[in-house]
Image 1: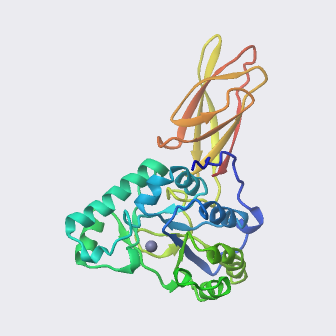
Image 2 (image 1 turned 90 degrees about the vertical axis):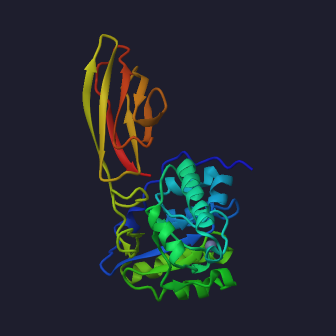
Image 3 (image 1 turned 180 degrees about the vertical axis):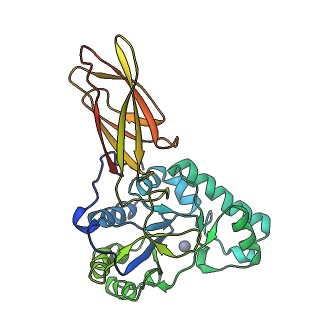
Length: 308
Ligand code: ZN
């Protein structure tokens, strides 16, 4: 079944984004996705509160659901690795483990365009062989501080209760698939806000929950700015150079002048040809450009940046 990636841009919820994070950050983690039944619901529950999270998809699910991987990415979620098909890795040989982890790195790179630096072992089971493979792939092992028991039929109120035990820097285990988890999200986020805690991302250097960073490929909160400068100029067209700062997960809207149209672009994925264009990262960094046909209008377009 094809699920179309959502092309529209969702502005962060400003009221929620303005909430105090004075008590610190916690990491909401969702394993085993993406799933056609629940992933979009999970994303919209997070989005409506302006919150972020960390997801640990399996490689198999990632490769089966590339558009949902894009949806994770576009929602600004941090994406980690959760093995290819969820085996008991501690019963496997080093080469089998290597295959489980590296195939998943590739599947996530191919579907979401990011290379994870976090690994969550299925069942939380780990050993020295697994740890050595993780480190050879640049992956930090992430377990959890609080188990929501959502995999074990916990009710949404029990899941919410579990999240209420989180303190600054801690991580809670949840899953992408249980209906009770999706139902619990608004209450969990409300409770965090009451306690001046914010949903963050997991630092690959400390393994703790921290503020989502602009330099983190999964970063989804904060702000970004775009600067616009005029480049080469010809009789019929001109170049515009754009540079984004503050985030790597941006959407830039470029307002062409009346009559102007897009000839070409570089280092970004640009949609539209007249009026307002939409540019997103193409994996080539935060500096990109467009060539615009003047069609009698020599004004330099304006641009604005939003987080995706
Ligand atoms: Zn799992």
